[in-house]
Image (cartoon, rainbow, N blue to C red; front, side, top):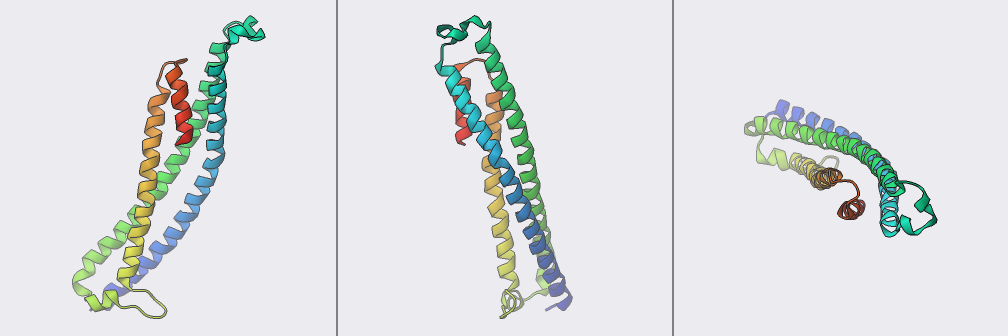
Length: 184
C-alpha cells in the first residue's frame, strides 16, 4: 500500500466533492432562472392558441390591415427571444455538466494510475469518520450520471425547438408544435 498515493487520492476526492457542491449550487440557480422563461413560453403558447382560434376577418379588428400576419410576426419574435434565453441557460447547464464530468474523470484517472499500489482492503476500508475510497468514487460516478441524462433530455428538447423555429410563418402545424415545446 502506498501512503502517498492514498493521500493524493483523498485530496483529489475532497477537491471533487467541494467542486460538486459548488456545481450543484450553480445548477439549481440556473434551473431557478429557467422557471420564468418556461412560464413565458407557456404564455406565448396560449397567445398562439388564441390567435389560431380567432378569425380576425369576422371581428371589428378586420379594419386593421395585415393584423393577423403582424401578430404572428410579433409572437414569433417574442418566442425567438425567449428561446434564445433558454438556450443561454442550456449552455450554462452544459458547462456545469462538463465540469462535473471532467472532475470525475480526473479522479478516476488518478485512481487508475495508482491502482497497482492500492490494495483492495485500503480502497474498501471505512471508518466512523470517513467513507471508503470505493464508496466515494461510486458517489462521484452517481453524481455524474445525475447530470448526464438531464442535459441529454434538454438537448433533445432544444434540438426539437430549433427545428420547429425554422418552419414557415403562419402554418398551423408550427403553432401546434410551439405549444408542444412548452409542454416539454
